Image 1 (tube, rainbow, N blue to C red):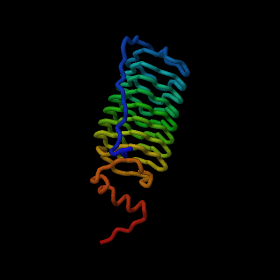
Image 2 (image 1 turned 90 degrees about the vertical axis):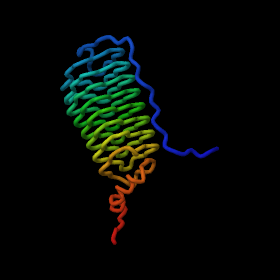
Image 3 (image 1 turned 45 degrees about the horizontal axis):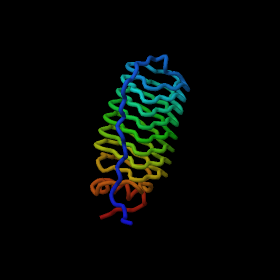
Image 4 (image 1 turned 60 degrees about the vertical axis):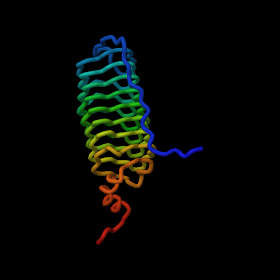
Length: 220
């Protein structure tokens, strides 16, 4: 059997939404399930949507300041133009989801499960994915201040033309995590980068950080 070479890209299918019915805010309540609806220009601030399941739906132009999405599920859905200064979403489940053109200040998504997720053209502040499971996830044309993947399991995750100020991969388990077109300024837990792919230039840029992490004294 030939040995596999190269980094495997995320396996993503486009989300196709047909025949949607317009929904209203009253259809969104904690622990409810909604399917095949389009929600536009809603203010969900201070709403408890914990445990809600949203499938085959479009949510666009949504403000969600301090909304509780604890253990919520989004399946086969597209989220566009979300404005969420504080997003509380621990243990959220995303499957076949596209997030586009959105701004999130602080996203608390620890212990989440993301499968087949595309994040495009978003500005993200602090994203807490500690202990999360990420499989087939693409970040494209995004600006991220801090991404915490400590204790996470990430498989086929790719960053394309993104800027990331700080990445924490402490005790993370990485497989085919592609950082090659990511502008990255700081990494915590560099000893746990096994399974990531970087360019020679990136490795050179981070050489001082690697030396410091492993206790290497660099002198002329």
